[in-house]
Amino acid sequence: MLEVKFYDNVADELLKFAVIISKTNGKWIFCKHKERETYEVPGGHRELGETIVDTAKRELAEETGAVEFDIKPICVYSVKGKTRVNENVEDESFGMLFIAEVFSFEELHSEIEKILITDTLVENWTYPLIQPLLMEEAKNRGFI
Image (cartoon, rainbow, N blue to C red; front, top):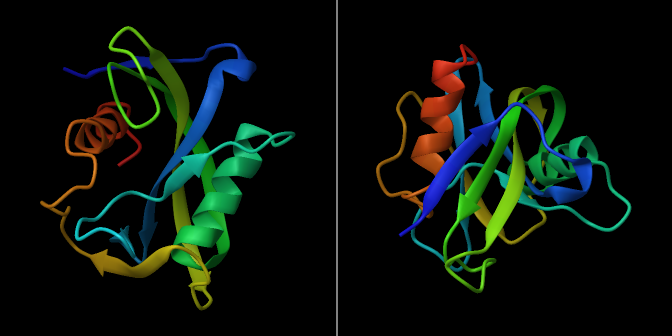
């Protein structure tokens, strides 16, 4: 069982991920990884020496082809339980949730096969126990 929690902030060194809820022209942007049949919100792991904002900008560009965009932090989230990242059920990993408005794109050059731009949220989530809750929290906080 996974537990997702939300925080206004935590110590910067705890932030390992950035997830970016993204829109363009009022439509949602989702990514489809080459190795999966599901869709996800852009995001990924923080690299050594990166700020969490730089992680969010890099991941948004890599996973959607976004070139021009505005990006803002929403809140910190954590996932507790066994996942691809957490080895034990007691492990808790932290990430920063962002929102972005994308104005222009370039061709994708990453592990992402394609992006989906749609009026509605996807139903076949890659992380169905996590990402819908992130969307709900962004809505509850007035960002979407």
